[in-house]
Image 1: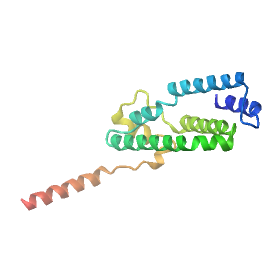
Image 2 (image 1 turned 60 degrees about the horizontal axis):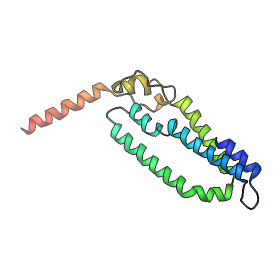
Image 3 (image 1 turned 180 degrees about the vertical axis):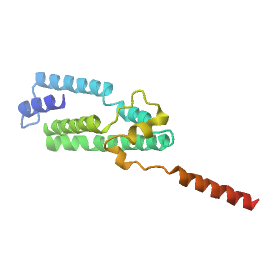
Image 4 (image 1 turned 90 degrees about the vertical axis):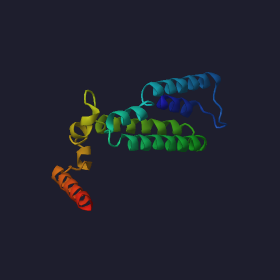
Length: 160
């Protein structure tokens, strides 16, 4: 949609900034169609992905970051869109089309499939197995945790 809108504006936008009525109606309909398609596809992903991928231990912090990032980028886009539209004219639609492609490539190659995997197993079965994200995962050392708990228990017993 973004590319089609960009092409229509690139071809038909006059130097005065006006466009024919038929083309204007087509652009408005395509923008409405884009918003509708976005609401059914990419829009909910900002809420769906954190709910399915963050383990229970970090879900609250993950959602906080996801919501904050969503609001921040919504604010930035809302504040800059009109200025960008004036400067870039039809190019702004190609700009956002390029970002849609980047998001699609990211989702295709870097978002793991979570179908049928319980949230409790997300770290072990998804993130630690993923070809890219596994390099960012640390191995928990159960022996180190056990030693730490024994030291804490011994310190609490000696205080009593």
